[in-house]
Length: 260
Image (cartoon, rainbow, N blue to C red):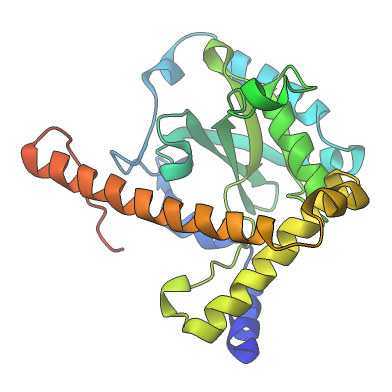
């Protein structure tokens, strides 16, 4: 398992994430680099043709730049924006605004940044209002607090129609675990690794002794989390069954993405 994981990491490190995305997402039009329209998943906005849009984008990029540490600003300054398009997001952010920007350096090295809408946390009614009035800032500061090393271009900005946005690289050389190939032993190991990462994040973001004291020495919390996981899995199956029923009834239209 370690050898297989190491090979996947080495393969992901061979090319930068933006380099890998570039041939799939970009094309040359009249000698200019553009993001390739791939409706309904990737498309350009009508508003991009309106007067003043470019000036708004430049101002927003300057505001985003101010949220980066000084050393990251110097790196970002090597790139210039060449195109912007809407990109339909996955299940975790369905219905929210998401755009991708293609930036190029003077040596024609690509950089794709993703601009994702953030909204008020669902925990606020129970845990109180966030310390940050901007939802994008809340997301960024939370990630910086929990992660030992966050995306180097992680920042925030206010976008069109006042949307609160956080910014990151489109893909930051991530390696997706192939959970569907795991046997029981590998799945248990993966669960332990996820638990370790979660515990470390809580340790960075809070006081470890308070968390430890709250959990105590019994297995009450462990069993509660197990019960929650089983209930969540059952609910997911019910939701998916309801979705398929709605599709068959024509209530919901779907788009099946073809393998590329």
